[in-house]
Length: 111
Image 1: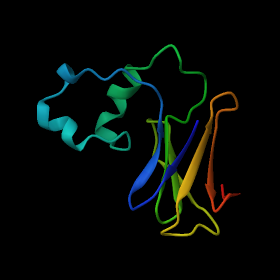
Image 2: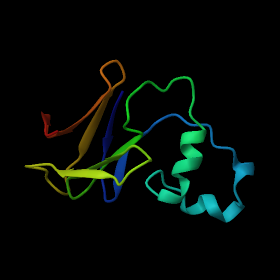
Image 3: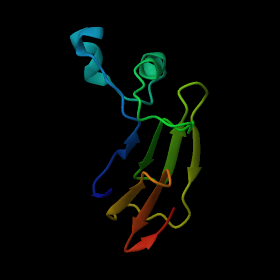
Image 4: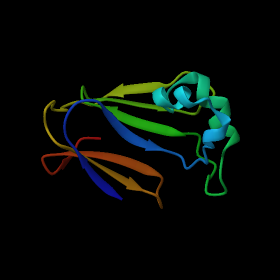
């Protein structure tokens, strides 16, 4: 799976979960993010059969070149990507067979 992102913000992937709107009040999901600690217990409880033994449940990259990932049990980890260029299209390659997420800019892998 490969996608290209432009603009400001953060973009990434999250494990497949089955969120039931009926489990939340309407306004609660307006500010939903898998990085928000208040949703972690719920998200782990919604695991699907497609989960493997990996402990990374979400991973994102922001437009400052910071990559963040978390296991929904402890504080998120992050790293700065050397050579990351702001205001440049960024491609993310998700390899489901290898369990990796790679970032590309200008046709070159940056992480």
